[in-house]
Image 1 (cartoon, rainbow, N blue to C red):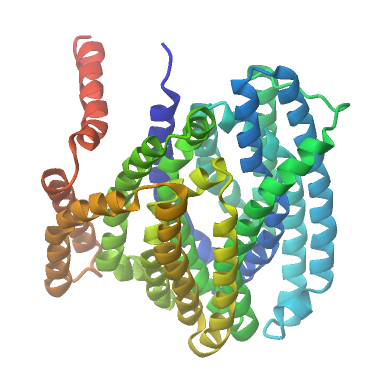
Image 2: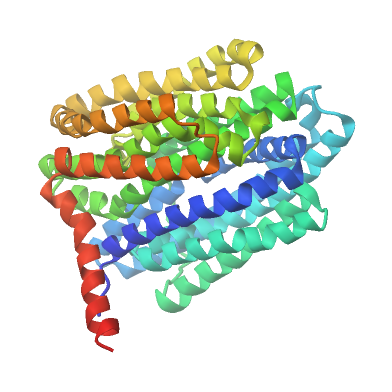
Length: 512
Protein backbone atom coordinates (compact mmCIF):
# COMPACT_ATOMS: atom_id res chain seq x y z
CA UNK A 1 0.00 0.00 0.00
CA UNK A 2 1.41 3.39 -1.03
CA UNK A 3 1.80 5.80 1.86
CA UNK A 4 0.70 9.42 1.50
CA UNK A 5 4.00 10.99 2.51
CA UNK A 6 2.51 14.44 3.18
CA UNK A 7 -0.25 13.25 5.51
CA UNK A 8 1.90 10.61 7.17
CA UNK A 9 4.75 13.12 7.52
CA UNK A 10 2.47 15.69 9.12
CA UNK A 11 1.02 13.05 11.47
CA UNK A 12 4.49 11.83 12.46
CA UNK A 13 5.57 15.44 12.94
CA UNK A 14 2.90 15.87 15.58
CA UNK A 15 3.69 12.52 17.14
CA UNK A 16 7.25 13.82 17.31
CA UNK A 17 6.02 17.03 18.90
CA UNK A 18 3.92 15.12 21.41
CA UNK A 19 6.80 12.82 22.29
CA UNK A 20 9.06 15.87 22.46
CA UNK A 21 6.88 17.43 25.11
CA UNK A 22 6.56 14.14 27.00
CA UNK A 23 10.32 13.53 26.94
CA UNK A 24 10.97 17.15 27.91
CA UNK A 25 8.52 17.02 30.82
CA UNK A 26 10.22 13.90 32.21
CA UNK A 27 13.84 14.47 31.20
CA UNK A 28 14.42 18.23 31.54
CA UNK A 29 13.68 18.64 35.29
CA UNK A 30 15.96 15.67 36.02
CA UNK A 31 18.68 17.14 33.81
CA UNK A 32 18.32 20.60 35.37
CA UNK A 33 18.64 19.23 38.89
CA UNK A 34 21.58 16.95 38.03
CA UNK A 35 23.45 19.79 36.34
CA UNK A 36 22.48 22.62 38.67
CA UNK A 37 21.44 26.11 37.60
CA UNK A 38 24.94 27.49 37.06
CA UNK A 39 26.14 24.44 35.08
CA UNK A 40 23.02 24.48 32.90
CA UNK A 41 23.58 28.19 32.26
CA UNK A 42 27.15 27.41 31.19
CA UNK A 43 25.96 24.71 28.79
CA UNK A 44 23.25 26.98 27.40
CA UNK A 45 25.75 29.81 26.87
CA UNK A 46 28.21 27.49 25.08
CA UNK A 47 25.55 26.17 22.70
CA UNK A 48 24.39 29.71 21.94
CA UNK A 49 27.88 30.89 21.03
CA UNK A 50 28.68 27.87 18.84
CA UNK A 51 25.28 28.08 17.13
CA UNK A 52 26.44 31.32 15.52
CA UNK A 53 28.71 29.14 13.36
CA UNK A 54 25.58 27.48 11.99
CA UNK A 55 25.17 30.44 9.64
CA UNK A 56 28.15 29.10 7.68
CA UNK A 57 25.76 26.79 5.80
CA UNK A 58 24.80 30.00 3.93
CA UNK A 59 21.25 28.75 3.44
CA UNK A 60 22.44 26.19 0.88
CA UNK A 61 20.02 23.58 2.27
CA UNK A 62 17.00 25.50 0.94
CA UNK A 63 18.94 26.29 -2.23
CA UNK A 64 19.53 22.58 -2.82
CA UNK A 65 15.79 21.86 -2.67
CA UNK A 66 15.08 24.74 -5.07
CA UNK A 67 17.51 23.53 -7.76
CA UNK A 68 16.96 19.82 -7.21
CA UNK A 69 13.22 20.17 -7.92
CA UNK A 70 13.95 22.21 -11.04
CA UNK A 71 16.19 19.46 -12.41
CA UNK A 72 13.78 16.74 -11.34
CA UNK A 73 10.97 18.39 -13.32
CA UNK A 74 13.35 18.36 -16.30
CA UNK A 75 14.30 14.72 -15.51
CA UNK A 76 17.99 15.67 -15.84
CA UNK A 77 19.80 12.99 -13.80
CA UNK A 78 23.28 14.20 -14.70
CA UNK A 79 22.57 17.69 -13.40
CA UNK A 80 21.14 16.21 -10.20
CA UNK A 81 24.29 14.11 -9.72
CA UNK A 82 26.46 17.18 -10.39
CA UNK A 83 24.38 19.16 -7.92
CA UNK A 84 24.87 16.42 -5.29
CA UNK A 85 28.62 16.40 -5.84
CA UNK A 86 28.89 20.18 -5.69
CA UNK A 87 26.96 20.39 -2.45
CA UNK A 88 28.94 17.61 -0.78
CA UNK A 89 32.19 19.43 -1.66
CA UNK A 90 30.79 22.76 -0.51
CA UNK A 91 29.47 21.50 2.83
CA UNK A 92 32.64 19.52 3.56
CA UNK A 93 34.68 22.67 2.97
CA UNK A 94 32.30 24.62 5.22
CA UNK A 95 32.85 22.01 7.94
CA UNK A 96 36.59 22.73 7.83
CA UNK A 97 35.94 26.48 7.96
CA UNK A 98 33.67 25.92 10.99
CA UNK A 99 36.50 24.20 12.88
CA UNK A 100 38.90 27.05 12.07
CA UNK A 101 36.37 29.75 13.06
CA UNK A 102 35.42 27.83 16.19
CA UNK A 103 39.06 27.58 17.24
CA UNK A 104 39.42 31.36 16.97
CA UNK A 105 36.28 31.85 19.10
CA UNK A 106 37.53 29.42 21.74
CA UNK A 107 40.93 31.14 21.98
CA UNK A 108 39.18 34.49 22.47
CA UNK A 109 36.37 33.20 24.70
CA UNK A 110 37.32 35.41 27.64
CA UNK A 111 37.00 38.53 25.44
CA UNK A 112 33.65 37.45 23.97
CA UNK A 113 32.01 36.32 27.21
CA UNK A 114 33.37 39.00 29.56
CA UNK A 115 34.41 38.78 33.20
CA UNK A 116 31.26 37.36 34.84
CA UNK A 117 32.53 33.77 34.61
CA UNK A 118 35.03 32.28 37.07
CA UNK A 119 38.32 30.78 35.80
CA UNK A 120 36.97 27.23 36.19
CA UNK A 121 33.78 28.15 34.31
CA UNK A 122 35.82 29.77 31.54
CA UNK A 123 37.99 26.67 31.22
CA UNK A 124 34.96 24.37 31.10
CA UNK A 125 33.07 26.47 28.53
CA UNK A 126 36.09 26.28 26.19
CA UNK A 127 35.97 22.48 26.36
CA UNK A 128 32.20 22.52 25.75
CA UNK A 129 32.58 24.81 22.74
CA UNK A 130 35.35 22.63 21.26
CA UNK A 131 33.17 19.49 21.38
CA UNK A 132 30.18 21.39 19.98
CA UNK A 133 32.29 22.78 17.13
CA UNK A 134 33.43 19.25 16.16
CA UNK A 135 29.79 18.13 16.27
CA UNK A 136 28.78 21.02 14.01
CA UNK A 137 31.63 20.33 11.57
CA UNK A 138 30.36 16.78 11.00
CA UNK A 139 26.78 18.05 10.67
CA UNK A 140 27.51 20.27 7.66
CA UNK A 141 28.26 17.51 5.07
CA UNK A 142 25.11 15.69 6.22
CA UNK A 143 22.95 18.66 5.14
CA UNK A 144 23.11 17.52 1.51
CA UNK A 145 21.68 14.12 2.51
CA UNK A 146 18.88 15.49 4.72
CA UNK A 147 18.01 18.02 1.99
CA UNK A 148 17.89 15.20 -0.57
CA UNK A 149 15.47 13.24 1.62
CA UNK A 150 13.26 16.33 2.04
CA UNK A 151 13.32 17.14 -1.68
CA UNK A 152 12.20 13.55 -2.42
CA UNK A 153 9.39 13.96 0.14
CA UNK A 154 10.46 10.92 2.17
CA UNK A 155 8.89 12.42 5.25
CA UNK A 156 8.00 9.11 6.92
CA UNK A 157 11.62 7.98 7.12
CA UNK A 158 12.78 11.46 8.10
CA UNK A 159 10.26 11.89 10.90
CA UNK A 160 10.69 8.34 12.21
CA UNK A 161 14.42 8.91 12.46
CA UNK A 162 13.83 12.16 14.33
CA UNK A 163 11.53 10.29 16.74
CA UNK A 164 14.21 7.64 17.33
CA UNK A 165 16.78 10.35 18.08
CA UNK A 166 14.38 12.18 20.38
CA UNK A 167 13.56 9.08 22.44
CA UNK A 168 17.18 7.85 22.52
CA UNK A 169 18.60 11.20 23.66
CA UNK A 170 17.67 11.03 27.39
CA UNK A 171 18.62 7.34 27.58
CA UNK A 172 22.09 8.26 26.33
CA UNK A 173 22.56 11.45 28.37
CA UNK A 174 21.04 10.64 31.77
CA UNK A 175 23.41 7.73 32.59
CA UNK A 176 26.32 10.05 31.74
CA UNK A 177 24.97 12.73 34.10
CA UNK A 178 24.28 10.21 36.84
CA UNK A 179 27.92 9.11 36.64
CA UNK A 180 28.88 12.73 37.38
CA UNK A 181 30.25 13.82 34.01
CA UNK A 182 28.10 17.00 33.99
CA UNK A 183 27.82 19.20 30.88
CA UNK A 184 30.99 17.92 29.18
CA UNK A 185 29.75 14.34 29.30
CA UNK A 186 26.36 15.50 28.04
CA UNK A 187 27.72 17.16 24.89
CA UNK A 188 30.02 14.19 24.15
CA UNK A 189 27.05 11.79 24.40
CA UNK A 190 24.95 14.09 22.19
CA UNK A 191 27.72 14.25 19.59
CA UNK A 192 28.03 10.46 19.41
CA UNK A 193 24.25 10.09 18.98
CA UNK A 194 24.17 12.76 16.26
CA UNK A 195 26.95 10.99 14.33
CA UNK A 196 25.00 7.73 14.49
CA UNK A 197 21.86 9.42 13.09
CA UNK A 198 23.87 11.10 10.33
CA UNK A 199 25.34 7.77 9.23
CA UNK A 200 21.82 6.31 8.94
CA UNK A 201 20.79 9.30 6.78
CA UNK A 202 23.73 8.76 4.46
CA UNK A 203 23.07 5.02 4.08
CA UNK A 204 19.38 5.66 3.32
CA UNK A 205 20.24 8.14 0.56
CA UNK A 206 22.88 5.94 -1.04
CA UNK A 207 21.10 2.58 -0.83
CA UNK A 208 17.39 3.38 -0.84
CA UNK A 209 17.21 6.61 -2.86
CA UNK A 210 20.14 5.63 -5.10
CA UNK A 211 21.68 9.07 -4.66
CA UNK A 212 24.44 9.64 -7.25
CA UNK A 213 27.39 12.05 -7.22
CA UNK A 214 29.48 13.62 -9.97
CA UNK A 215 32.60 15.41 -8.74
CA UNK A 216 34.46 16.03 -12.01
CA UNK A 217 32.07 18.57 -13.47
CA UNK A 218 31.94 21.36 -10.89
CA UNK A 219 29.64 23.99 -12.42
CA UNK A 220 31.07 27.38 -11.43
CA UNK A 221 28.35 29.24 -13.29
CA UNK A 222 25.71 27.37 -11.30
CA UNK A 223 27.74 27.96 -8.14
CA UNK A 224 27.65 31.71 -8.76
CA UNK A 225 23.90 31.59 -9.39
CA UNK A 226 23.29 29.56 -6.22
CA UNK A 227 25.50 31.86 -4.16
CA UNK A 228 23.47 34.88 -5.24
CA UNK A 229 20.24 33.02 -4.49
CA UNK A 230 21.56 31.87 -1.09
CA UNK A 231 23.10 35.15 -0.03
CA UNK A 232 19.79 36.51 1.20
CA UNK A 233 18.92 33.25 2.93
CA UNK A 234 22.33 33.51 4.61
CA UNK A 235 21.45 37.00 5.79
CA UNK A 236 18.22 35.59 7.27
CA UNK A 237 20.24 32.96 9.14
CA UNK A 238 22.48 35.66 10.60
CA UNK A 239 19.40 37.60 11.65
CA UNK A 240 17.83 34.53 13.28
CA UNK A 241 21.03 33.97 15.24
CA UNK A 242 20.96 37.59 16.40
CA UNK A 243 17.31 37.37 17.41
CA UNK A 244 17.46 34.01 19.20
CA UNK A 245 21.01 33.63 20.51
CA UNK A 246 22.56 37.03 21.06
CA UNK A 247 20.26 37.48 24.08
CA UNK A 248 22.02 34.66 25.96
CA UNK A 249 25.41 36.11 25.11
CA UNK A 250 24.39 39.54 26.42
CA UNK A 251 22.85 38.05 29.57
CA UNK A 252 25.95 35.97 30.22
CA UNK A 253 28.22 38.97 29.69
CA UNK A 254 26.27 41.28 32.02
CA UNK A 255 24.79 38.89 34.62
CA UNK A 256 26.50 35.47 34.52
CA UNK A 257 25.41 31.85 34.10
CA UNK A 258 22.43 31.76 36.50
CA UNK A 259 20.54 34.40 34.49
CA UNK A 260 21.46 32.55 31.29
CA UNK A 261 19.91 29.40 32.77
CA UNK A 262 16.62 31.22 33.49
CA UNK A 263 16.51 32.53 29.93
CA UNK A 264 17.56 29.09 28.64
CA UNK A 265 14.48 27.38 30.10
CA UNK A 266 12.23 30.01 28.48
CA UNK A 267 14.13 29.61 25.22
CA UNK A 268 13.65 25.84 25.30
CA UNK A 269 9.87 26.22 25.68
CA UNK A 270 9.88 28.85 22.94
CA UNK A 271 11.77 26.46 20.63
CA UNK A 272 9.08 23.82 21.13
CA UNK A 273 6.46 26.42 20.26
CA UNK A 274 8.25 27.25 17.02
CA UNK A 275 8.74 23.58 16.17
CA UNK A 276 5.00 22.97 16.47
CA UNK A 277 4.40 25.65 13.86
CA UNK A 278 6.99 24.36 11.40
CA UNK A 279 5.82 20.75 11.77
CA UNK A 280 2.96 21.42 9.36
CA UNK A 281 4.60 23.92 7.02
CA UNK A 282 7.81 21.91 6.57
CA UNK A 283 6.07 19.09 4.70
CA UNK A 284 4.60 21.59 2.22
CA UNK A 285 7.97 23.06 1.15
CA UNK A 286 8.31 20.88 -2.00
CA UNK A 287 4.68 21.66 -2.96
CA UNK A 288 5.37 25.41 -2.79
CA UNK A 289 8.40 25.07 -5.07
CA UNK A 290 6.41 22.87 -7.49
CA UNK A 291 3.56 25.42 -7.74
CA UNK A 292 6.01 28.25 -8.41
CA UNK A 293 8.10 26.20 -10.87
CA UNK A 294 5.08 24.95 -12.85
CA UNK A 295 2.52 27.80 -12.82
CA UNK A 296 3.46 30.48 -10.28
CA UNK A 297 -0.26 30.66 -9.47
CA UNK A 298 -0.77 33.30 -6.74
CA UNK A 299 -4.33 32.10 -6.11
CA UNK A 300 -3.11 28.56 -5.41
CA UNK A 301 -0.32 29.93 -3.20
CA UNK A 302 -2.81 32.10 -1.27
CA UNK A 303 -5.08 29.10 -0.69
CA UNK A 304 -2.13 27.08 0.59
CA UNK A 305 -0.97 30.04 2.73
CA UNK A 306 -4.42 30.31 4.35
CA UNK A 307 -4.92 26.57 4.76
CA UNK A 308 -1.60 26.10 6.56
CA UNK A 309 -1.98 29.35 8.54
CA UNK A 310 -5.40 28.35 9.90
CA UNK A 311 -4.13 24.94 11.03
CA UNK A 312 -1.13 26.56 12.69
CA UNK A 313 -3.35 29.12 14.42
CA UNK A 314 -5.62 26.41 15.86
CA UNK A 315 -2.69 24.53 17.41
CA UNK A 316 -0.69 27.58 18.50
CA UNK A 317 -3.66 29.37 20.06
CA UNK A 318 -4.28 26.31 22.25
CA UNK A 319 -0.62 26.27 23.33
CA UNK A 320 -0.26 30.03 23.84
CA UNK A 321 -3.50 30.55 25.78
CA UNK A 322 -2.75 27.43 27.82
CA UNK A 323 0.67 28.83 28.63
CA UNK A 324 -0.86 32.14 29.73
CA UNK A 325 -3.19 30.44 32.22
CA UNK A 326 -1.11 27.42 33.27
CA UNK A 327 2.46 28.43 32.41
CA UNK A 328 3.65 29.90 35.70
CA UNK A 329 2.68 26.95 37.94
CA UNK A 330 3.97 24.56 35.28
CA UNK A 331 7.42 26.18 35.13
CA UNK A 332 7.69 26.43 38.92
CA UNK A 333 6.79 22.78 39.44
CA UNK A 334 8.71 21.52 36.40
CA UNK A 335 11.97 23.49 36.38
CA UNK A 336 11.93 24.84 39.93
CA UNK A 337 10.88 27.99 41.74
CA UNK A 338 14.22 29.64 40.94
CA UNK A 339 13.10 29.72 37.29
CA UNK A 340 9.98 31.86 37.92
CA UNK A 341 11.13 34.66 35.58
CA UNK A 342 11.21 32.13 32.73
CA UNK A 343 7.40 32.43 32.62
CA UNK A 344 7.48 36.15 31.82
CA UNK A 345 10.26 35.68 29.28
CA UNK A 346 8.56 32.86 27.36
CA UNK A 347 5.25 34.75 27.26
CA UNK A 348 6.93 37.81 25.75
CA UNK A 349 8.63 35.64 23.13
CA UNK A 350 5.74 33.42 22.03
CA UNK A 351 3.09 36.13 21.91
CA UNK A 352 5.31 38.39 19.79
CA UNK A 353 6.25 35.68 17.27
CA UNK A 354 2.81 34.08 16.83
CA UNK A 355 2.06 36.23 13.76
CA UNK A 356 5.22 35.11 11.99
CA UNK A 357 4.70 31.47 12.96
CA UNK A 358 1.24 31.20 11.36
CA UNK A 359 2.74 32.73 8.20
CA UNK A 360 6.06 30.86 8.01
CA UNK A 361 5.14 29.09 4.76
CA UNK A 362 5.42 32.58 3.26
CA UNK A 363 9.19 32.38 3.71
CA UNK A 364 9.30 29.38 1.36
CA UNK A 365 7.01 31.15 -1.11
CA UNK A 366 9.40 34.11 -1.20
CA UNK A 367 12.40 31.83 -1.70
CA UNK A 368 10.64 29.83 -4.44
CA UNK A 369 9.80 33.10 -6.24
CA UNK A 370 13.32 34.42 -5.60
CA UNK A 371 11.78 37.40 -3.78
CA UNK A 372 13.38 36.89 -0.39
CA UNK A 373 15.97 39.67 -0.57
CA UNK A 374 13.57 42.34 0.74
CA UNK A 375 12.80 40.25 3.82
CA UNK A 376 16.53 39.86 4.40
CA UNK A 377 17.19 43.59 4.35
CA UNK A 378 14.21 44.38 6.57
CA UNK A 379 15.11 41.71 9.10
CA UNK A 380 18.73 42.82 9.13
CA UNK A 381 17.73 46.36 10.08
CA UNK A 382 15.31 45.02 12.70
CA UNK A 383 18.05 42.78 14.13
CA UNK A 384 20.36 45.77 14.49
CA UNK A 385 17.60 47.66 16.30
CA UNK A 386 17.10 44.57 18.47
CA UNK A 387 20.76 44.61 19.58
CA UNK A 388 20.76 48.36 20.24
CA UNK A 389 17.59 48.11 22.35
CA UNK A 390 18.52 44.84 24.07
CA UNK A 391 21.89 45.98 25.46
CA UNK A 392 20.49 48.61 27.89
CA UNK A 393 17.34 46.55 28.58
CA UNK A 394 19.44 43.47 29.42
CA UNK A 395 21.63 45.48 31.77
CA UNK A 396 18.55 46.76 33.62
CA UNK A 397 16.08 43.85 33.48
CA UNK A 398 18.21 40.76 32.67
CA UNK A 399 16.36 38.15 30.57
CA UNK A 400 13.03 39.99 30.58
CA UNK A 401 14.68 43.05 29.02
CA UNK A 402 16.45 40.94 26.39
CA UNK A 403 13.19 39.20 25.48
CA UNK A 404 11.37 42.52 25.15
CA UNK A 405 14.02 43.85 22.74
CA UNK A 406 13.66 40.73 20.59
CA UNK A 407 9.86 40.89 20.70
CA UNK A 408 9.75 44.50 19.53
CA UNK A 409 11.80 43.69 16.45
CA UNK A 410 9.64 40.66 15.59
CA UNK A 411 6.38 42.62 15.87
CA UNK A 412 7.62 45.42 13.61
CA UNK A 413 9.27 43.10 11.08
CA UNK A 414 6.74 40.26 10.85
CA UNK A 415 3.59 41.88 12.13
CA UNK A 416 3.66 44.99 9.98
CA UNK A 417 6.30 45.25 7.26
CA UNK A 418 6.20 41.66 5.94
CA UNK A 419 2.42 41.58 5.79
CA UNK A 420 2.50 44.65 3.57
CA UNK A 421 5.16 43.00 1.41
CA UNK A 422 3.13 39.80 1.06
CA UNK A 423 0.14 41.80 -0.10
CA UNK A 424 1.72 44.35 -2.46
CA UNK A 425 4.68 42.42 -3.89
CA UNK A 426 4.53 38.65 -3.35
CA UNK A 427 0.91 38.38 -4.49
CA UNK A 428 -0.58 36.78 -1.37
CA UNK A 429 -4.08 37.97 -0.49
CA UNK A 430 -3.19 38.91 3.06
CA UNK A 431 -6.57 40.58 3.67
CA UNK A 432 -8.32 37.27 3.04
CA UNK A 433 -5.80 35.52 5.30
CA UNK A 434 -6.50 37.81 8.26
CA UNK A 435 -10.24 37.60 7.64
CA UNK A 436 -9.98 33.83 8.05
CA UNK A 437 -7.88 34.18 11.22
CA UNK A 438 -10.39 36.64 12.75
CA UNK A 439 -13.18 34.13 12.10
CA UNK A 440 -11.18 31.50 13.98
CA UNK A 441 -10.36 33.94 16.79
CA UNK A 442 -14.02 34.19 17.81
CA UNK A 443 -13.77 30.61 19.07
CA UNK A 444 -11.20 31.75 21.66
CA UNK A 445 -13.67 33.85 23.67
CA UNK A 446 -15.15 30.95 25.66
CA UNK A 447 -11.81 29.22 26.49
CA UNK A 448 -10.20 32.53 27.53
CA UNK A 449 -13.13 33.27 29.85
CA UNK A 450 -12.82 29.73 31.28
CA UNK A 451 -9.07 30.22 31.78
CA UNK A 452 -9.65 33.45 33.70
CA UNK A 453 -12.16 31.73 35.99
CA UNK A 454 -9.79 28.82 36.63
CA UNK A 455 -6.96 31.21 37.52
CA UNK A 456 -9.24 33.19 39.81
CA UNK A 457 -10.69 30.32 41.84
CA UNK A 458 -8.34 27.29 41.54
CA UNK A 459 -4.96 26.66 43.16
CA UNK A 460 -2.98 25.41 40.16
CA UNK A 461 0.15 24.80 42.25
CA UNK A 462 -1.54 21.61 43.42
CA UNK A 463 -0.50 18.95 40.87
CA UNK A 464 -3.92 17.23 40.87
CA UNK A 465 -5.74 20.53 40.30
CA UNK A 466 -3.24 21.45 37.59
CA UNK A 467 -3.79 18.22 35.65
CA UNK A 468 -7.58 18.11 36.06
CA UNK A 469 -8.25 21.72 35.15
CA UNK A 470 -5.65 21.60 32.38
CA UNK A 471 -7.62 18.75 30.77
CA UNK A 472 -10.88 20.65 31.33
CA UNK A 473 -9.40 23.71 29.60
CA UNK A 474 -8.28 21.64 26.58
CA UNK A 475 -11.75 20.08 26.30
CA UNK A 476 -13.45 23.51 26.46
CA UNK A 477 -11.03 24.85 23.83
CA UNK A 478 -11.63 21.91 21.46
CA UNK A 479 -15.43 22.10 21.77
CA UNK A 480 -15.46 25.85 21.21
CA UNK A 481 -13.10 25.61 18.23
CA UNK A 482 -15.08 22.71 16.72
CA UNK A 483 -18.45 24.45 16.79
CA UNK A 484 -17.44 28.10 16.46
CA UNK A 485 -14.17 28.08 14.52
CA UNK A 486 -12.95 25.35 12.19
CA UNK A 487 -14.35 24.57 8.74
CA UNK A 488 -15.31 21.21 7.23
CA UNK A 489 -11.88 20.59 5.70
CA UNK A 490 -10.25 21.02 9.12
CA UNK A 491 -12.88 18.84 10.80
CA UNK A 492 -12.15 16.10 8.26
CA UNK A 493 -8.42 16.34 8.99
CA UNK A 494 -9.09 15.60 12.66
CA UNK A 495 -11.97 13.12 12.43
CA UNK A 496 -11.06 10.99 9.38
CA UNK A 497 -7.92 9.43 10.97
CA UNK A 498 -9.98 8.65 14.09
CA UNK A 499 -12.76 7.05 12.01
CA UNK A 500 -10.19 5.01 10.05
CA UNK A 501 -8.49 3.90 13.26
CA UNK A 502 -11.80 2.82 14.80
CA UNK A 503 -12.72 0.97 11.61
CA UNK A 504 -9.33 -0.79 11.53
CA UNK A 505 -9.69 -1.86 15.18
CA UNK A 506 -13.19 -3.24 14.50
CA UNK A 507 -12.07 -5.16 11.40
CA UNK A 508 -8.71 -6.44 12.62
CA UNK A 509 -8.90 -6.75 16.40
CA UNK A 510 -12.49 -6.99 17.62
CA UNK A 511 -13.44 -9.56 14.95
CA UNK A 512 -10.44 -11.68 15.96
